[in-house]
Length: 472
Image (tube, rainbow, N blue to C red):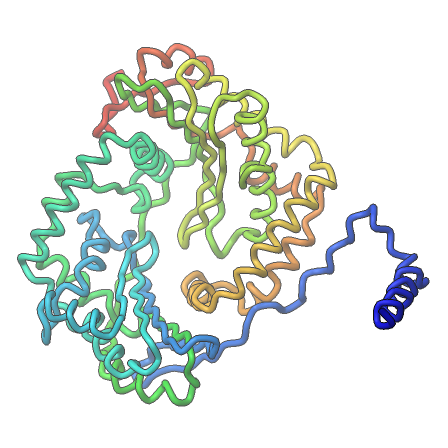
């Protein structure tokens, strides 16, 4: 009892102190400013063959992760659309030393994962395992990267799988909308190329061998190393595994620029029997190294970045036309794009498109209220700071700075740049990047039900499921 009598007055004394009395608990506290330089430190080294290596030391888990980034992606396919993806998919399906089964058995024994994928601008090859398996992991990683043989039987399986996937995608409205959007937005530029059964059948095993020999070169790649290692200790091991990889000249594609969009035009992919429409409103956007990307994150979040975005609030909460409506910027190495979209019932398709265009227009004509803008600033800054806890994400960003030619302080100033967006700045960005005067409206739905209403928005071109336009 004496102990209780002692604690109670002490607690009462704290609650009645001048400091506590000065805190107004009815008001939300203001967040602290974002750190000036919040991006983690990393080491930059080069192997004897010129391969740039980024080392991010992280001793929180006894693991090691590798990520090789080859600076050639699907934009380097040339006439063989899908070539980069085929090459990436078959890297671990047989090497000069092991066939596909033996390679899989070795990686399984180590508890190691090895994955490769192609994007528009690059191919990434990732591997991870416990740090104690560093030596055998590096051996297998180097095998997959340097000495794949692309076995004929494995290539045939991958080709058959790709054809099956293309057939399935004919029944997926979102995939059809994405393909038609790329075609319309980028035209003859490589970013606008989409795989077809004909293009898949045109690829041969020899094409993969040629693509790999041409583009997989140390002077056309970077390596990120993340995990419980020390930079000076891992470098000799990397040199032993990858140092004999030979440099060579890598061709730089010079693709044609797409024709600029003019006016508001509707591109309708006819899908008989559809009871809903997939909508995409698209326009050109900034390239990765030429646009105010952090600031556009805040602007995009305001328009269609999630539940609090205006598109979601308008099309779903206010009108009940869709389960969700979103927007995004896609800044690539050579060109960028903006897209906003939703899925709606047929009878309100044209109304939903009209509201999307209105919301884009409103952002350039009306300043964003400070409370709404502050919500989006803090949301984006908070997400970015949380993402810095992931060393793998840090490795990807370090490699992106090299791939896209970004300044060294790009991510150190990222949070501050998002935090500094004002209403006037957001309005100016909207006028530059969201003006709804020159846009392509892509719709996948039943033409018989929605075409007449869409013609009120702009001229309509109708396509079939093979993305071929109907005769005028």
